[in-house]
Length: 449
View 1 (tube, rainbow, N blue to C red):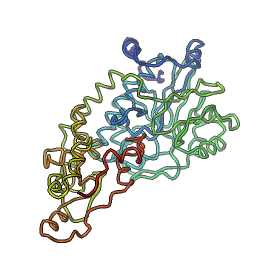
View 2: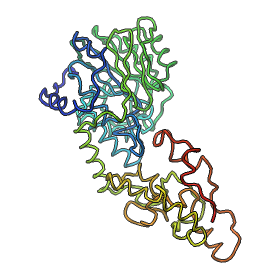
View 3: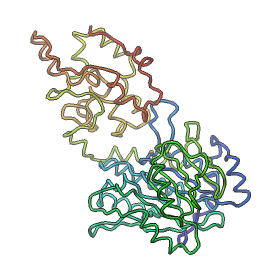
């Protein structure tokens, strides 16, 4: 994992990481262990990670996260592996998401990732945000490559078309391409095949590795259009490839799935070795320290959501009304209120406080009521009575309903009907992959009394 022209990683640092991460980390898969013994180059990669330092920890069985992936990568010497991060590594354009992405880039450096590609989600950020993130990657000594992206204006993009990396004595030329359909303010995307054809004249005999943020059909088409590619790695594909796909002299391999799989290919082998990044893998100590630092930084930051203008809650809303708190519901709905009080919903924020995640907007959006809305919960302390998944999280803001009933009027139907879709706003595949409505609903079922 030595980048040509760059400084090699300090051997002592890597040795320490291997010792620290040995316990609780599965043994190196046999194909990889044999490759290391035979001094064969291994290519490892992840795509679509979305700045995933770690998966949501609300339930067991969550997959992915750099926190565990770094532990898997630490099993081998950096010099044996070409370690790649494909497109989709950015976390979004909100201020807290950009901050998270910077920490994620620092984590990639700690994990000794060799090279980063660029994907459609990075292009969507636009030239200003992308330029800032690329500069941060450069400060962390993370090479970023892309063959078909340029800025329309004077905004600098700290990336190169090609980066050379040596693994197990084999030198590779690495680049990335984004799909021609990708767009972002201030950025120009050229035809990926034409850009790669221009690069093939500069290979100096090195195998060309292309990180491509494309689906399987796009990966195959790219390999057909540019026969000088050694391997195309994707991408926007859900399941990992069990074996390389031959497209003429080119091999196509892939593993997307939102960074839940760390894929490996022993260069030239007939099969791939994907590893599910499961919750049994021990945390990497240096990445865990980085996550802790990120959570502390969030607490000290003034974020745009703290202004409580637009809101970012994932929960129900009723136009024009405001939040009043679950205590306002108890007088008329004592039975339902008692059921709620004895549920985990009533203590949702406490679970974040126990882990020191109570200032993270990505967690708060489903653990409090009305995050960042004018009458909802605020990270800065406003409306602490809404620091839970309250009645109004599912039924919507209650001020209109309470005013009508307090005045002896018939309820006008201002509350939001609760259906299975109400639950799925938070109990989705990313945060609650084992959610089953028929199993979960009985735990909170209540009538209107």
